[in-house]
Structures are given as C-alpha cells and as structure tokens.
Length: 151
Image 1 (spheres, rainbow, N blue to C red):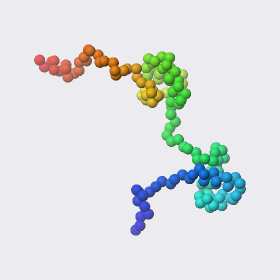
Image 2 (tube, rainbow, N blue to C red):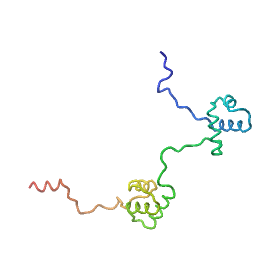
Image 3 (cartoon, rainbow, N blue to C red):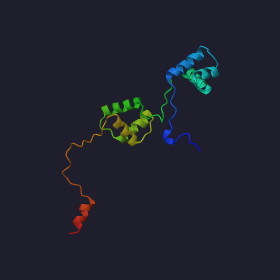
C-alpha cells in the first residue's frame, strides 16, 4: 500500500498571485471567453474565476482581499486617543475611574485588566515608580509574628 504523503511533507496551498487574478479578471472583462474557457486557459477552477468575479463586483478591487482574523479590538484608535486625553488632563485617574468614564462616555464595557493592558501597549505606565526608596517602616509578616511568640 502506498501513502501519497506524510504529514511533514504536506504543504498548504499557496494563494494565487495578484497578477494572475488581474489577468483572469481582465480577460473576463474583455469577454475573451466564458468562465469555463477562462478557467481552462489559466489552469484554475471555474469556481475560482466565479469567486474572483463576485469579489471584484462587490469590492471593485482586483487584488486579493486581506482577511483580518480574530475579533475586532474594543480599544479603537479613537478610544485610545480619548484615554490619552483623559490621562493628560487628569494623570491620577485610577483604572476604576477610567472604566467608569469609558462606560459612561464611550458606552464601552471592559475590565480593568484590559484597560491596564491597553495603557501598557500605549506606552503609559502606572504612576508608582520603583526608583523611590522603600519605606523604612518594616511590614510584619506572619513568620515574624510566630518567631516572637516562641520566646
């Protein structure tokens, strides 16, 4: 029994060049043949020619349509700009206050964590600075409390 290919030999099909797409569509526009004739001439399926034609009629573009996978971001450039404006005018806003403002003014419901991540991506940081010296007052932990009770 012969096996055509193994998994590691398998390659995904490559997208056709925009040049080929253009040639197919121009050929169709010039009425150089029917869909089956054009498909045969360029070595593609009839379904592919039909798909190109319908995409062209829908978008007006001969080039490949780039698909953006995944869900659309909640924090659009306009929302990011609004966040930056709020923080410039009032730099001590907390995540909770920003969350409230987003809900009231932008009708955008999001978690404090997603706001924090967005601010981090925008290059904005928390106002706490790690370069400030630590407090001289030592915080008692449960381990120190236990040691003291053993005396």
